[in-house]
Image (cartoon, rainbow, N blue to C red):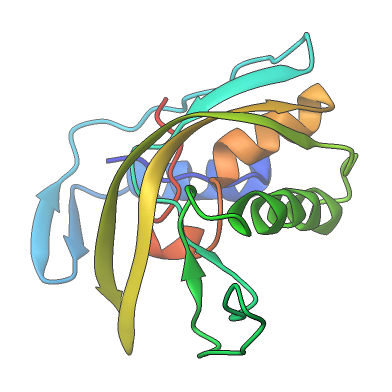
Length: 163
């Protein structure tokens, strides 16, 4: 099981807390902890990253149909839909700005899209798909995105980047 954070101090605190435990109650499932290790993000020294997610990436769109009619606000879009790239790009930049990092990160290409998957979270289902994307930007920003995850609802397990 992997836990992550784009803030090193948070990741270190998680690791220290887990290291003191033998058992973790995860939603009623007892998990025996046999070791704790830190996985450092790649350097991305060239300012380019090819990231593939292990869990689906979810993104909300505008809710407008092709003919300009506004639908439900819970308008989830998939990587194969026209709005996805723009909303995904905006999400990358907001994450960088939130962390005080260089927000000049770009989605250069989507090289692979997995099958659509929907998971119930809270009050409804969130559809998404695993993806492989090529990004460019400051190495520190790319490392933070690798640790944070791609798309929305990362704290619910969506958009987790495969190590």
